[in-house]
Image (cartoon, rainbow over all chains, first blue to last red; front, side, top):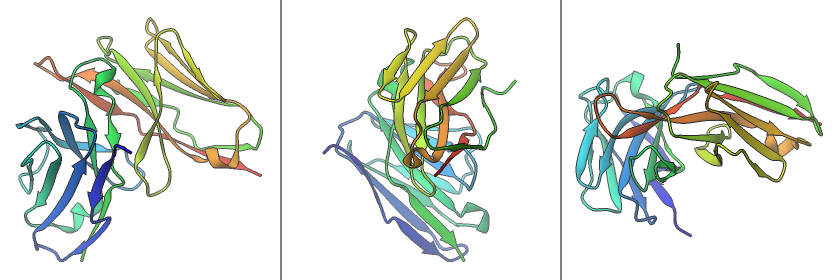
Length: 116
Length: 114
Protein backbone atom coordinates (compact mmCIF):
# COMPACT_ATOMS: atom_id res chain seq x y z
CA UNK A 1 0.00 0.00 0.00
CA UNK A 2 1.21 3.50 -0.80
CA UNK A 3 1.93 5.32 2.40
CA UNK A 4 3.75 7.91 4.48
CA UNK A 5 6.24 6.54 6.99
CA UNK A 6 7.86 8.34 9.88
CA UNK A 7 10.80 7.28 12.00
CA UNK A 8 11.23 7.06 14.85
CA UNK A 9 7.72 6.97 16.29
CA UNK A 10 9.00 8.16 19.66
CA UNK A 11 12.10 10.28 20.22
CA UNK A 12 13.56 11.42 23.50
CA UNK A 13 16.29 14.04 23.46
CA UNK A 14 18.00 16.30 25.92
CA UNK A 15 17.59 20.04 26.10
CA UNK A 16 19.85 21.53 23.44
CA UNK A 17 20.84 18.23 21.81
CA UNK A 18 20.18 18.22 18.04
CA UNK A 19 17.64 15.74 16.75
CA UNK A 20 16.58 14.62 13.27
CA UNK A 21 13.18 13.19 12.39
CA UNK A 22 12.64 11.24 9.20
CA UNK A 23 9.77 10.92 6.74
CA UNK A 24 9.46 8.83 3.60
CA UNK A 25 6.64 8.35 1.13
CA UNK A 26 5.72 5.84 -1.52
CA UNK A 27 2.92 7.99 -2.99
CA UNK A 28 5.31 9.77 -5.37
CA UNK A 29 3.78 13.08 -4.34
CA UNK A 30 5.44 16.36 -5.24
CA UNK A 31 4.84 18.11 -1.93
CA UNK A 32 6.03 17.14 1.53
CA UNK A 33 5.06 19.03 4.68
CA UNK A 34 6.13 19.15 8.30
CA UNK A 35 3.63 20.05 11.00
CA UNK A 36 3.98 20.49 14.74
CA UNK A 37 1.01 19.51 16.88
CA UNK A 38 0.75 20.12 20.60
CA UNK A 39 -1.88 18.64 22.87
CA UNK A 40 -5.47 19.77 22.10
CA UNK A 41 -4.29 22.06 19.30
CA UNK A 42 -4.62 21.91 15.55
CA UNK A 43 -1.56 20.94 13.52
CA UNK A 44 0.69 23.93 12.82
CA UNK A 45 2.50 24.02 9.49
CA UNK A 46 6.26 24.56 9.84
CA UNK A 47 7.34 24.34 6.18
CA UNK A 48 6.91 22.42 2.97
CA UNK A 49 8.85 21.34 -0.09
CA UNK A 50 7.40 21.38 -3.57
CA UNK A 51 9.89 19.09 -5.26
CA UNK A 52 13.18 20.78 -4.27
CA UNK A 53 11.66 24.21 -3.61
CA UNK A 54 11.56 24.97 0.10
CA UNK A 55 8.92 27.23 1.65
CA UNK A 56 9.22 28.26 5.27
CA UNK A 57 6.22 29.56 7.21
CA UNK A 58 6.87 33.09 8.49
CA UNK A 59 6.55 32.15 12.14
CA UNK A 60 8.65 28.98 12.07
CA UNK A 61 11.63 29.43 14.42
CA UNK A 62 15.14 29.26 12.95
CA UNK A 63 15.75 26.31 15.25
CA UNK A 64 13.78 24.18 12.78
CA UNK A 65 15.36 23.19 9.48
CA UNK A 66 14.45 20.71 6.79
CA UNK A 67 16.12 18.74 4.01
CA UNK A 68 14.65 16.85 1.10
CA UNK A 69 17.42 14.88 -0.63
CA UNK A 70 15.05 13.18 -3.07
CA UNK A 71 11.35 12.79 -3.88
CA UNK A 72 10.81 10.07 -1.31
CA UNK A 73 12.54 11.41 1.79
CA UNK A 74 12.27 14.53 3.91
CA UNK A 75 13.97 15.31 7.22
CA UNK A 76 13.18 17.68 10.05
CA UNK A 77 16.20 18.91 11.99
CA UNK A 78 15.77 20.60 15.34
CA UNK A 79 19.11 22.23 16.07
CA UNK A 80 18.73 22.99 19.76
CA UNK A 81 15.51 21.56 21.16
CA UNK A 82 13.90 23.43 24.00
CA UNK A 83 11.25 22.21 26.41
CA UNK A 84 8.66 24.06 24.33
CA UNK A 85 9.50 21.94 21.29
CA UNK A 86 8.05 18.80 22.87
CA UNK A 87 5.18 17.87 20.56
CA UNK A 88 3.97 15.46 17.91
CA UNK A 89 5.67 16.10 14.57
CA UNK A 90 3.60 15.11 11.58
CA UNK A 91 4.80 14.64 8.03
CA UNK A 92 2.26 14.90 5.21
CA UNK A 93 2.29 14.71 1.43
CA UNK A 94 0.12 15.98 -1.40
CA UNK A 95 0.19 15.78 -5.15
CA UNK A 96 0.28 19.55 -5.66
CA UNK A 97 -0.19 22.95 -4.03
CA UNK A 98 -3.20 24.16 -5.94
CA UNK A 99 -6.60 25.10 -4.70
CA UNK A 100 -8.31 21.93 -5.82
CA UNK A 101 -8.44 18.44 -4.41
CA UNK A 102 -4.94 17.64 -5.67
CA UNK A 103 -3.89 19.37 -2.46
CA UNK A 104 -5.45 16.60 -0.35
CA UNK A 105 -2.89 15.77 2.30
CA UNK A 106 -2.01 12.34 3.66
CA UNK A 107 -0.30 12.14 7.01
CA UNK A 108 2.29 9.82 8.44
CA UNK A 109 1.80 8.36 11.94
CA UNK A 110 3.88 11.11 13.54
CA UNK A 111 6.93 11.24 15.79
CA UNK A 112 6.30 12.13 19.41
CA UNK A 113 9.24 14.17 20.69
CA UNK A 114 10.06 14.44 24.38
CA UNK A 115 12.67 16.95 25.54
CA UNK A 116 14.27 16.32 28.93
CA UNK B 1 -12.87 36.32 12.21
CA UNK B 2 -10.91 33.08 12.36
CA UNK B 3 -10.03 31.45 9.03
CA UNK B 4 -11.72 28.18 9.99
CA UNK B 5 -14.08 27.98 12.92
CA UNK B 6 -15.74 24.86 14.29
CA UNK B 7 -18.22 23.99 17.01
CA UNK B 8 -16.05 23.91 20.14
CA UNK B 9 -17.67 20.76 21.57
CA UNK B 10 -17.14 18.37 23.17
CA UNK B 11 -20.07 16.27 22.03
CA UNK B 12 -21.19 13.31 24.12
CA UNK B 13 -23.84 11.16 22.46
CA UNK B 14 -25.28 7.67 22.96
CA UNK B 15 -24.71 4.92 20.44
CA UNK B 16 -27.14 5.17 17.56
CA UNK B 17 -27.53 8.93 17.81
CA UNK B 18 -27.21 11.31 14.90
CA UNK B 19 -24.65 14.06 15.39
CA UNK B 20 -23.87 17.10 13.28
CA UNK B 21 -20.69 19.16 13.16
CA UNK B 22 -20.62 22.66 11.73
CA UNK B 23 -17.75 24.71 10.38
CA UNK B 24 -17.42 28.17 8.82
CA UNK B 25 -14.55 29.64 6.84
CA UNK B 26 -13.68 33.25 6.15
CA UNK B 27 -11.90 33.23 2.78
CA UNK B 28 -14.36 33.09 -0.10
CA UNK B 29 -11.53 32.15 -2.51
CA UNK B 30 -11.20 28.74 -0.83
CA UNK B 31 -11.76 25.96 -3.32
CA UNK B 32 -11.51 22.64 -1.56
CA UNK B 33 -12.76 21.38 1.77
CA UNK B 34 -12.23 18.32 3.91
CA UNK B 35 -13.15 16.56 7.09
CA UNK B 36 -10.34 14.72 8.84
CA UNK B 37 -10.66 12.44 11.82
CA UNK B 38 -7.97 12.28 14.50
CA UNK B 39 -7.88 9.62 17.21
CA UNK B 40 -6.13 10.39 20.48
CA UNK B 41 -2.33 10.57 19.97
CA UNK B 42 -2.62 9.50 16.33
CA UNK B 43 -2.31 11.31 13.02
CA UNK B 44 -5.20 13.04 11.21
CA UNK B 45 -6.80 10.76 8.65
CA UNK B 46 -8.88 11.94 5.73
CA UNK B 47 -12.52 11.12 6.40
CA UNK B 48 -14.15 12.86 3.45
CA UNK B 49 -13.52 15.51 0.87
CA UNK B 50 -16.49 17.88 0.69
CA UNK B 51 -17.91 18.80 -2.70
CA UNK B 52 -20.39 21.47 -3.71
CA UNK B 53 -22.99 18.88 -4.60
CA UNK B 54 -22.70 17.28 -1.17
CA UNK B 55 -21.46 13.77 -0.72
CA UNK B 56 -22.27 10.71 1.31
CA UNK B 57 -20.19 7.74 2.42
CA UNK B 58 -22.20 5.21 4.36
CA UNK B 59 -23.29 6.82 7.63
CA UNK B 60 -21.41 10.04 6.88
CA UNK B 61 -22.78 12.97 4.90
CA UNK B 62 -20.85 16.15 4.15
CA UNK B 63 -22.35 19.34 2.78
CA UNK B 64 -20.91 22.60 1.53
CA UNK B 65 -22.70 25.93 1.23
CA UNK B 66 -20.38 28.32 -0.62
CA UNK B 67 -22.74 31.29 -0.33
CA UNK B 68 -22.75 31.01 3.46
CA UNK B 69 -19.15 29.72 3.64
CA UNK B 70 -20.33 26.83 5.73
CA UNK B 71 -19.45 23.13 5.84
CA UNK B 72 -21.18 20.38 7.78
CA UNK B 73 -20.65 16.74 8.65
CA UNK B 74 -23.51 14.50 9.69
CA UNK B 75 -22.92 11.11 11.32
CA UNK B 76 -25.93 8.82 11.49
CA UNK B 77 -26.31 5.79 13.75
CA UNK B 78 -23.12 6.65 15.60
CA UNK B 79 -20.84 3.83 16.79
CA UNK B 80 -18.43 3.64 19.70
CA UNK B 81 -15.64 3.58 17.13
CA UNK B 82 -16.70 7.03 15.86
CA UNK B 83 -15.27 8.57 19.04
CA UNK B 84 -12.50 10.90 17.88
CA UNK B 85 -11.73 14.54 17.15
CA UNK B 86 -13.18 15.78 13.86
CA UNK B 87 -11.18 18.45 12.09
CA UNK B 88 -12.67 20.80 9.52
CA UNK B 89 -9.97 21.64 6.97
CA UNK B 90 -10.12 24.30 4.26
CA UNK B 91 -7.72 24.91 1.40
CA UNK B 92 -6.99 28.63 1.60
CA UNK B 93 -4.92 30.77 -0.79
CA UNK B 94 -1.51 31.72 0.58
CA UNK B 95 -1.02 35.47 0.74
CA UNK B 96 0.74 36.90 -2.29
CA UNK B 97 1.01 33.72 -4.29
CA UNK B 98 -0.82 31.17 -6.35
CA UNK B 99 -0.31 28.41 -3.87
CA UNK B 100 -2.79 27.20 -1.32
CA UNK B 101 -2.38 25.64 2.06
CA UNK B 102 -4.64 23.59 4.30
CA UNK B 103 -5.93 25.45 7.32
CA UNK B 104 -7.26 23.40 10.18
CA UNK B 105 -10.06 24.16 12.56
CA UNK B 106 -9.39 23.43 16.21
CA UNK B 107 -11.42 20.24 16.02
CA UNK B 108 -14.50 18.96 17.80
CA UNK B 109 -14.18 16.03 20.18
CA UNK B 110 -16.90 13.41 19.85
CA UNK B 111 -17.44 10.72 22.46
CA UNK B 112 -20.01 8.03 21.69
CA UNK B 113 -21.20 6.28 24.82
CA UNK B 114 -22.59 2.74 25.13
